[in-house]
Image (tube, each protein chain N blue to C red):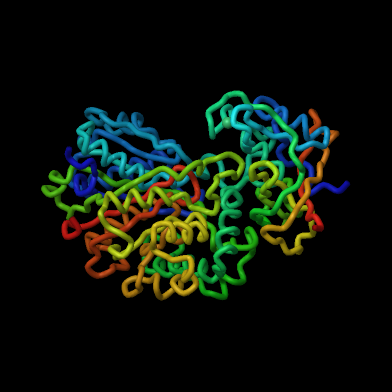
Length: 145
Length: 394
Ligand SMILES: [Zn+2]
């Protein structure tokens, strides 16, 4: 599979609070924080539920589907690895099945594809198996409804 | 119970700034620039620098207060304050913190300042290479989202798309700053006017709303203001400029991780602006001039909307160049050239310009200006803003 962006960008630290998320992506699952007390999802990971102040936070798989909340298409390379590889498309995706938390990823599309706020998207898991340690990014693709 | 307020209680008695340089071109070290600006503010105020007893800054300024106090031979340090948050979100907060220290009796004579020679350290707009992305960045950097422009761009996309605001509104904001800079001998963009054609043909930084001239540059320099009790300011040589209102902070969870602020398409001023106007007992219609921090022109739009200067429904008609120009525009803005064209001194240069307008000594003077608002760096958290005025505004 072609990757959204070239090699050489910062790799995610997969330890600490967010470890269950990264473990999930390796298995092709979207796993995020859910409060055992009030039952609500939250993202990104926190030590506490911002709604009810419970520290009892579970991790649950959510549907890998969402809607584009906003987007941008950078042309200026902000990292040496991006030289010659711009523009590319970043989307902020809202997950209606998970209390409308939002995630950031790349939209898999050509650089001249129009992007529409509200468009339905689905997650595409992008493994980086050769990395040490390996990791998987979550990218997005427009979904036909 | 007496009213808890800073309104009319403290004043800016002196302003100072260095020569402003293009990025990397300061012949002087950043700390020396800070010292120069502080001494200039003291000289302007007619105060012996050894009588300064406090320092307030923001944006993780590297020129720390105790070290400045030692270098200047300050007799007694009574207030030393760093406001959380990066960039210029804290510019008005630093002035207000100095004011709060003075009004509460913790200190008597406090410098609020910013010093920047970023090229002597690391650049904005370029990420560090090599390290694994930690915390929030683990969910952003691997997707090529690293720079300040990128952190803010999706707020602007959503707000402008949702409200039908055209890129031309941002062009007017950029052109106003460049226009005013052409008369300002200390403006780094003097001699480099911006036309509609030049703006429109500039390269994209980020689609769909950030061309080159929508984005701030980096600069070297320093700026400082001296804050004293209002009563003392009356005995000093300069016409006092009174703090009328100030606020800082952010709305509910505006700093939520990974772009999850519930009210996302915002500059984060919604509660801050309300609190500032309440303290000032004034509103946007009372302002003769506005200084609105441009990190990116889209942020200025959001900031103006949230302070009540612009209605999103009529933004396309309101944000046209002639409305923004001194002396005759309906809303003269960034009258010394702002961050874009005078100097990106993280907004401290805008506080200095607000003081000049109220003294009647600005290069692009708005006749009879009595009230000026300074809207600090938008879209970060915490943000801050302030409004200052002459004695006639009290
Ligand atoms: Zn909870």
